[in-house]
Length: 266
Image (cartoon, rainbow, N blue to C red):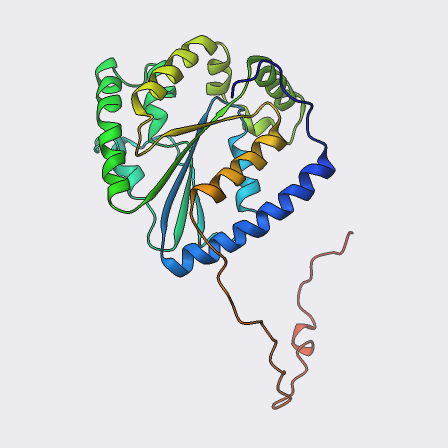
């Protein structure tokens, strides 16, 4: 349900408590996906500074990168520009037992490429026509496809851009393209609305998450993923460390004498 006024921002303590519970269930989901050889694609789209990176980090920080694989492709190379548009994305699709998370995806064509003039209007129209057909092919092939749009407000995006400018450890997040997108807010809004209208289908709907409150957005996103991927807890035998053998005892520290150790500054 759309809301005119955002709720009070979530406190860190409450956020961390809920996040821990959800991350435990993500680990259970991971076991199920691996056991049943499921193939899952989760793609994140949204304006610059919508919170995609932080949300993906919250999802993946406690799970195995062998199961949860993040794909953040750079701009296409000269060779890739000559390929079929979807080709470089399909190379990243999951095998059995994998969840592939796209930090931006083929929907670049409906967003930045279209707004910034990196593709022709014909390319854009063709994408919007073919994309639902391709996604039906993906879903019919047995892949679970989940599409997330993070919706950040104008004022909040400006606040986050200023935070990046002022914070030296976050300045790397601010690219010339981000600054250009900031000035084209309404162009991106029109592109977003057209994209959602043309590509939100019964077999691959878009799910929108308001992200002005990053903490709430992350929790809501993880809860949605857990619901969208049917799973149950896999029963596992309790792990017990084996006894270390004393056979062939060896002074394992002696061989380190005279080696170069990092200075212990802390």
